[in-house]
Amino acid sequence: MVTTKPPNIGKIFFRQFLSPLIYILLIAAAVSLILNELSDAFFIAAVLLINAIVGTFMEYSAEWSAASLQTMVRTMARIIREADAFEVDSEILVPGDIVLLESEIKFQRILGCWILVPLKSMNLCL
Figure (cartoon, helix red, strand yellow):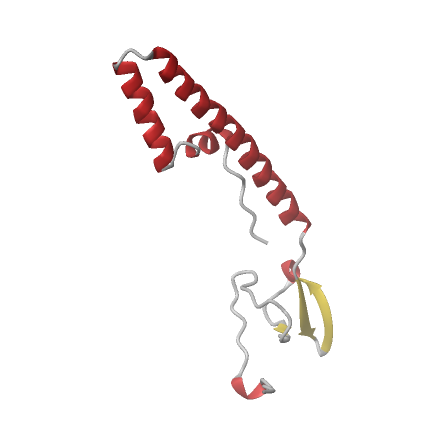
C-alpha cells in the first residue's frame, strides 16, 4: 500500500495565503500602511494571521487523521493460488496469483501490476 507523508507544518501555513481574497486583503493592508492608517493595517494583518493559524491547525490535524486512517485500511484480494481460492491481503500478492474480480469489488492497481481478464471469461447480465 502506498502511503504518503503529510506535508510539514510550514508548507501548510504558507498555503493558507494562496487565495485571491487573501491577496486583496494583503494589498489593503499595504495601502493602509502607505496612507498611515496603522490601526487598519494591523487589524487586517492580525485577521490574516489568525486565519492562517486556525487554517493551519485544522488542515494539519486533518492530514494526520487521514494518514492514520490510511494505515488502518486493509485492501483484500480474492485470488487463486495453487488451485485454491482464498482471500489475502493485497500486500502479499506474488506474480502468478490469479486475482478474481467481482462486480462489487473496487478495481484498483495493486503492487504496480495491472490485472488483465480475458473478455470471454466475463459474464455480463443486463
